Length: 252
Image (cartoon, rainbow, N blue to C red):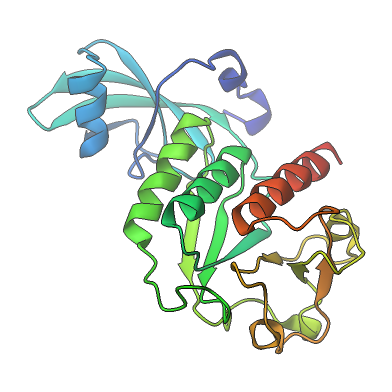
């Protein structure tokens, strides 16, 4: 089946349960599925043999899976690819600092995933209140996957720990790196206006104490963005920027 022939069924199935099974493959129709998702599908949602569930492998593909048989902790399904989507926000990276409140960080991550963003870099801001607080990547991954399924997003979020922002793209002195600060003048539209529009773009958010010179000193060509006339909390800035950016980029 060609990509253009695939029906966009998610637009008509907004009330479906979406499951995440990374082992689903385009080349394999019949396979065994197990894990927590099987427990939820069979034990909680009470799906039965002969029924149908929808699942993604986190790579932009949606599968319709007929349940052929079940065991105590696994099911055998026949899967059919029903939709493939392009990730329109795949080159946007949100660089998120340690925050004093884990709840606020988790809230921001959840909402950004719901908007369709999939790339997140966690770093230690020099002015973080709890600079050395450990990021619980396993918990954040679960939150991100849950948000992916709830929002019917077909791309699994990519979570990276880069404590000092050493791994992000520094080509041309970091011209694709943007930081958020009330003292700046450019609006968020400059991100899409960059001539290197297909390159990865990194949005760096400050912790409670703001960004320090040490946070971005390696990137002389970085650009500053102003989101609002008021000073925003870190998690508010992330969600607000995500909302503006997703709306602007997808429409354009």
